[in-house]
Image 1 (tube, helix red, strand yellow):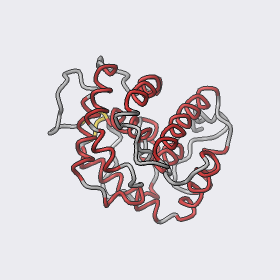
Image 2: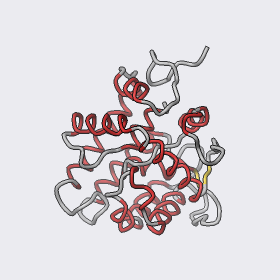
Image 3: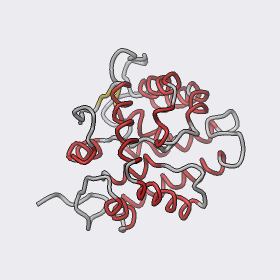
Length: 242
């Protein structure tokens, strides 16, 4: 018998990008821990929308950076982002967010549906800078790989277009033959930037082939946040693979 989902205690693990699965994962009640995660993400996303949807500012600009840092430092450790490595994230994360502010401004209006259009330069800067936060030696590993969640968990909050790709995500994605991933999917905890790009392009392709999921995400985002100007497709897919 398959293990019950730890956040949806009445739901077996399912792994497929389909509308029924997505509705089940979002619609069924979570347990206490799951509700905390949902509330933390939604609270951050409300903040992001309040800053970005009606003006030219963004959550990493000079006015909002400090508040964004405080929110993420309060949330990300509880999401086990820095577990297992003795890193000084309280010092390194604010520095990293300051360093990626310009790159974030370049990519923030692209959705997962447009991932192929995003220039490499800002994405790579974000990858290397956030990845270095979880390294014991505070240097960039530009020729190596980084802990995937050290990049993708904060980026799922900031941008909303990538899955967290934590261990549960990776295991369930690996089981999903419907994705037709262009490479053998790696469940390893460290990825390279080119590999992450391949996986993201695969998810873009899968999502574009499912207009009913795109429509559902748009409607759900409007219902929950009062806006669908910025839709966190990566967050919805992240829930789909829990």
